[in-house]
Length: 269
Image (cartoon, rainbow, N blue to C red):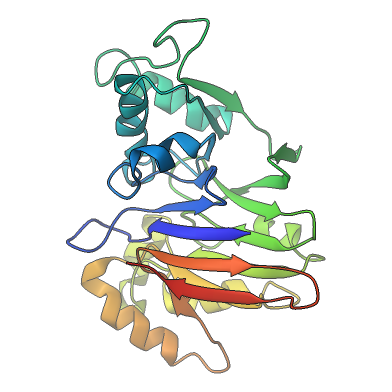
């Protein structure tokens, strides 16, 4: 399993792109940034996009991506997967032929560049060799985290945007979590803002990890607000016995199983 970080920031600023994580070149977890990070060939390799929720910073790469595919006449098709409520927001508010064209009928109804596939937290789905379990998390809009497991039982947990929650930790109770990608948006002194907006602080995140029976092998932090990054990093460093890594654009995380059984991190510019 190879994870390429296209964006991992809680707000846009120079050098800070919105959240998007590309798995093995074809599966995108959220789509806050796509076309500005990938060339034409790489964009066409994406076949599925899993959306955590419909906030703009997690979906705004999709309109440009589908427009690029159609304009370049590439024979690529995208499946947008999420809960019915999230997909309904896309239909109603983005791809509504007012804000952006309805690409589920472009270039034709028979061969659209994009289609929606609703998923349920009650039923795992299989995409390209991965078993994916959607889990409702607690945000200010309908939102999902994802548990992604490959054929070798390596498990990635992506929380998306979430404040204090329970179900995702219960779901992973008996799994070997190799990688956790979790949000911490605000420093501790902004706890009221974090809670009202459905996000976490370092102290709140530490309490979330207490809900896990076994800590993940690697813990990566995403969605930090750039203005507060130094404060969040300092407060995370003060948490006793907890080792975390902060994601940044162009980072690559590789999980492999077998005799080597390795998990490595590389930075690519």
